Length: 406
Image (cartoon, rainbow, N blue to C red; front, side, top):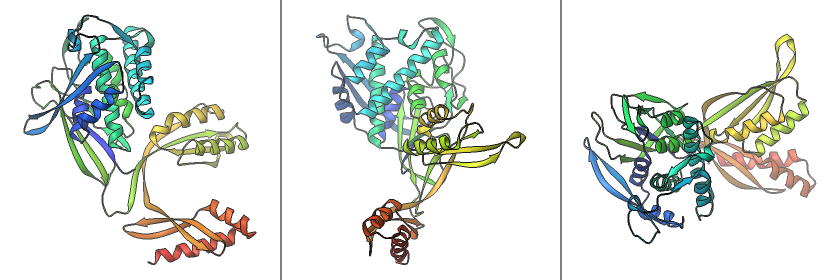
């Protein structure tokens, strides 16, 4: 992991604040407008407007939502009110020429929004309809923000506690508590901070985007800030700027190491055949686990059992849990998030009497400290030369060791 995007929601988070923050981090309006052009049906565009508050300088995002209706008006002046449901918005995204990861992420955000509204109104997500104006704004905010995040090529996203205002606010249904019920649904499981502001600070779109993107619960140690973006909202708050700050973090230079978040999944098993656990370990590794292994343990009444441990990227959690539950008889899986520090790695090719072998070289604080031959290469060279694998491995290792003294 080389780049992390960490958000500080000082004065809230909304779709347009996220767009503004990502543009201030370097995503151009032209790039986003080219993305909107891929949607086909709408003439959406975004404008970056310089803004300052509390001595801080950044951008505001202004989204224009003209629809191809022949009237040429801003969308909220249109004459054909309509409602778009989740299925229609999903079709719009699917039929676009957006990159596949942006499609998947945008759809996930819209589904999260629909599911939250459905729980509030006791409906199914498919029954929820986004009003025409809201749908166009949300389409621009969500697809634009997902595309902007993808273009920044970050490896992880996290954020500080999100601010929650107090009191009541007026909506189409009348007076409701602040934060509104739909936003509260989206904030479940996320860190929040109650602040002395009588406004809705985090919007449903902002909460849906951040919760969908989130892969980190805490900022990593030993990283440095490489870029800062300030995205301002449209509101004037009482005691703080209506600001969302984004910081691009990279590993400190010269440490010769990489740090990234690592999710640990554990489960105790005492009634699944060990052969099946072995097959599961292979499936977990094939599905992208960093590592998967089993440990012999003594369970209650001294029954012999197996501790299955899986290490993976946080975003792989759902895939790993699905595999473990489907392939074992376990009733529960423990999880905890940690960080791992790794040597910076590069691959070198060394010559041996048996042929070329790739060697993985690990660097610590600017010095190569370990060299490990690729096992598959050693097996292939041994088969070709009718030699013991051990002989090829040791020859490659000896060549690799020479690189450590240079």
